[in-house]
Image (cartoon, rainbow, N blue to C red; front, side, top):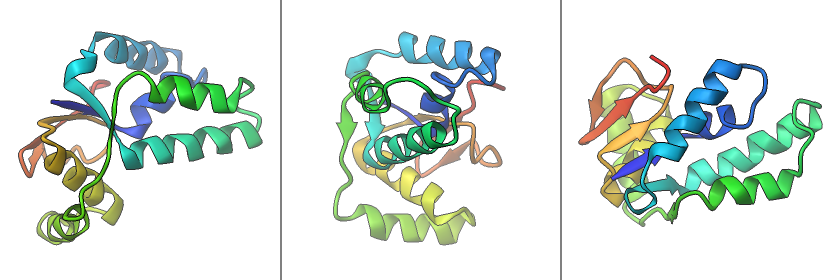
Length: 136
């Protein structure tokens, strides 16, 4: 199972870096819907980032429509009750941020084995989740 991090979704709509935009779009289009999810916190963070981009004048499209379109690419994976506890252990064991640990825990709890992200590149696998930077 695959998951996509916020930065991949944002690059897919951000005109500031055309090469990353094209690569992010290519990745999104290549991933099978039946084997890919968007973790809940990624969906929420993506909405917040797009809203911030709109307020700053870096995004001029339909904010709500864009969030819905990105969200509809893949199913949303909701966190489990155990995700928070698991994330605390991941944070301590791997010395990563609370938010990154929460994302890894949510992926692991959902059965995700590959997370496409530009973050956390110091460790190739955490909790059975392979971290893949599609821009490397």
